[in-house]
Length: 300
Length: 248
Image (cartoon, rainbow over all chains, first blue to last red):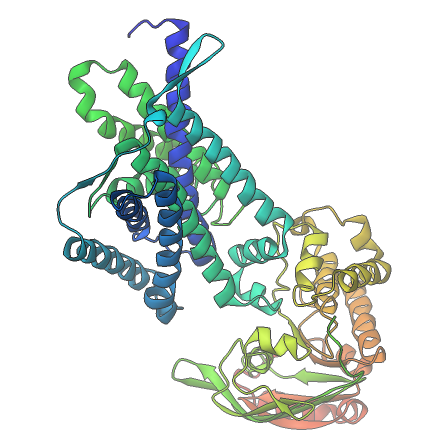
């Protein structure tokens, strides 16, 4: 065990919350589509990639990071909607495994398109310097980027809760997530609800993608794999298709990872992911349905 | 607000539908007019549920036509059918168990654009079904079977349908409550709606219905005024026995 001063402990707590917030957002985007369509969209990671390249293209052509971020989010949302239209809508009603393979195909196609159109090599770009600054809060030095990440996650989640709970379209999405056929009997258009779920998922992926590249400052064709894996693990921890579970799962995963980084001896650092996944196995051993899992439903 | 003429007629001609390679309906004709209850009777597996599902587009119409007031619904979808005033209350009742009673009702008024109309209909629903007002904030999954059936019908009324298709509304209910549900179904028709009712409680259904027909092996075996059908009990039994498994 490493002993730690209270101030450092609090800083690590902020780091854990920040990473957890990022994972929570990633998981949320994946869970929104799963809730409505019962589809594990493995092309979800490529939305992060598309967002990252959106940022890269803008920043490298002289635009500000903020403009890049807006373009990245729009690109991720648009590609998410497009994949629904092209790769998933024609397969409506097909077996789970068919649609899953379609999502893999989308992932491979997007990766290869980027390799051909941009470069197979990583592309680095400058992120705003102030993101690396520290601000002093009550004598505690906290990074700007972790704070922005936490604030963004809280705002985004509050927005999604408001959308789902207080709007008619949110009611329709929740109904469709509970029972698709009965939702149609209420006059809810299947196409519209699914399209909206993909748009929302893409938007969330875009926001998470911007925060992801703000940490790494690079875009690579296969960079979507890690975020989609994190999102998948987080949703499984929380309970598949359950939005609250996805958020909780993301937070748990973030906290576990940061805790491991802090407390594991230096030599064990490369195994953080392995230990984190071990922790997930432990969670699932005792709660196979996830932390808040019952049926797959969009609940807030 | 959805403005519709007071009454409507649903006409289906030569309806053919099924699952996979199998045909369940082999050319069924149905008429439902405003203000009447038409009972669909028949043994299990005769195609009663498939008929209702096909009329609203949950099952594909393979051949035949479905029109409402002369407008073809074609190969419709539930959204389109509801837009034309045809609502289905499925056998499972289709309650959203995670929603409160009020949310269930509100989602029933999804197609209604006017918030005022939704509010008014919600108030109507609570007046007609006082128990739902009492339970308005309760999770719908916790309601009793009879209460859920009331909620399912109240929810269908939120879209102010002209034609209501009810699939076994009395299923799983205590005999006393079955009478209440039958009276409710009658009152829906008396309000000027057309009701197509699939029911296993044959006698109770026919006592309340205006007309009825017996479906067996995907075809209409017998049809007529409800009173005639009651009088021809023996013939009806034969029509039933002609069915797939002879039960019901």
